[in-house]
Amino acid sequence: MDELILAVEECDLNTSSVCAPTDVAELFEFREALFTIGGFPVTRTVFLMSLAALIVIALLFFGLRRKRLVPGRFQASIEALLGFVRDEVAVGIIGPEGIRYYPYLAALFLFILIGNAFEVTPFINFPITSRMALPLFLALLTWVIFIVAGLRRQGLGYVGHIIWPPGVPVFLKPLVGIIEFFSIFFVRPFSLAVRLFANLVAGHVMLSILLVTALVSLTSLGDISLIKSLFGFAWWALALAIYLFEVIVILLQAYIFTLLSAVYIETSLHPEH
Amino acid sequence: MEAISGSLALIGYGLAAIGPGVGIGIIAGNAVQAMARQPEAAGMVRTTMFLGIAFTEALALIGFVLFFLA
Image (cartoon, rainbow over all chains, first blue to last red; front, top):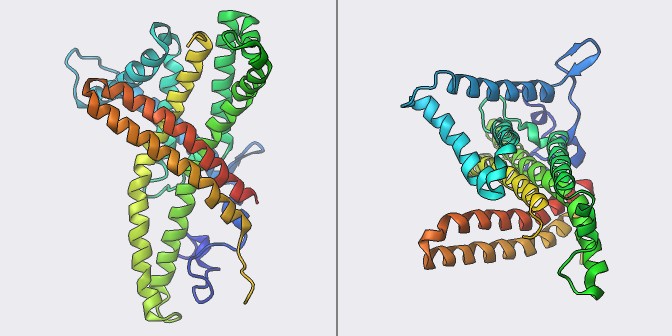
């Protein structure tokens, strides 16, 4: 058991109440690669990302393979998921033109959902979106897409309307223009990435610390007092409650990322709102 | 009196989480009120509520990330 959980080794419950590392950066250490393909190290994050992509492809492939008019259970559930993204997010937010962006939004939603779901799957317990590279990349994808959509729809008037907004009193135009410019071009992708990343990393770190503390306090009965040892059950119960909460957070964060991507595309295409 | 030791970053995050906490409460409360007044609009209200919650929660999460950076 100790080889599987590295944090168990250096945890001393006589000095600290939870098994937290003294240096916070230890929680984000770079683990060694599982194997190397021609000089490219395949870490567990890379492996899990590929696994998430394969799972999404497999879900869609097997769910929509034999399209019967009256769908079976699996096909109905996949259709419900995709229909939800289309009706609530793509077409619901962007309007009839949203169907062009629907493949991107559906792929985004499913990939983030499966990637987040790795946090609660039993032997994996590591959400791939808890490493900043993936949320940052997805936010940059959305950023490029909504900027290009705006530029194609309005030409250079897109940037012009942001910096010099119509419908604002003249003496406020520079101020609102600067605020809008930074908000649209910098705050949006950054906040999109940080929102997903921080939600997932918070849940992962909390679960790790609480569960390791529970394990160490329950197994080291001889070294620490009985009260402290039995308190491990309280940590375990709290970890269970947070586990259930994380299931909600997983769904919510995937939905919110997709929803905000659709909203940003919509405001690029229809600036009059 | 002994010196109080601890982490300033933790206090910073705690202060940063007050605002979004109140804000999300206001958003959700108004959303519940709107859904009670007009149940037909519940779908649209729910979507807008999620949107508002996402924006205000982002500020608390930026504080959380900066806690790790400090």
